[in-house]
Amino acid sequence: MSKQYNDLETRFKYLIPNDTDKKFGLWVNTVGFERIPPNSPYPLKDHPYGYFFNAKKGRILHEYQLIYITKGKGAFASENMPRKEINKSSLIILFPGQWHTFYPLPETGWNGYYIGFEGQVADNIVKNGFLFKEKPLLNLGLNEELVSLFSRALEIAEADRMASQQQLGGIVLYMIGMILSISKNGNANIINNKIEQAKIVMNENVFKEIDPEELAGKLCVSYSNFRKTFKNYTGFAPAKYFQLLKLHKAKQLLIESSYSVKEISFMLGYKSTEHFNSLFKKYFELTPLKYRHSTAIEKPRPA
Image (cartoon, rainbow, N blue to C red; front, side, top):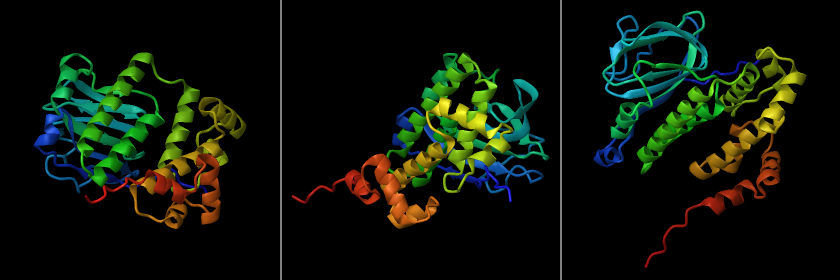
């Protein structure tokens, strides 16, 4: 049976910034990932007042939002732009006080990442001519690094630790810098776009197993060409790249979670903890447990 990729479940987090967060100059109100399967209701109804909207009537937000579509097709319109069709690789920029609407096509649905933010830093970026209400829609091509930034922002928001707003503010600025660079330097070519799509699939399915040959088939390219191009593009064969993604996710879980090494090994799909330990040590020269201990923050000793 063919595996299904890009099937993350919808996740989102709403944040309440405090006065200190607002002094930083840029704060995040919401971040999430939205999966709308074909022929599913839209918009989702479990968002708070002010975010839920009727796609036919549209809405006005009090914040900026970046929305990156990575799968499927849809449509977008705003007071500054008539209805435009959008597809995977489209980035929507929403501006505070601007009427807009968007929705996926019923026959395709879509996957989309989003982050909503405010602050005088964002206002100055618009005021100084880096982002324009008249250009709320950009075709960036597929970019795995941008997807990783959205994913990392969601993880930080869900953890909601001290100074998380400052981390999120930094991620938003990095995203805007990337978006400006990509839009000014041109879109990736078709081959590179296929590789970025493959990297996004791997990133979104790091807790699952991926067959590189089947993935090449889903991208409509021969496996031999896919493997060669992927290695030239990333420096790694597809299977090894995916393995490294899993191991880097393991490093993150070892630092940021209380899951045991055995639990992390199981979560990432390794057949045995011994195999996981061996691979981890091969690449990072430490066992998972020693890595966790080496990165633990030492507690201050009592006086």
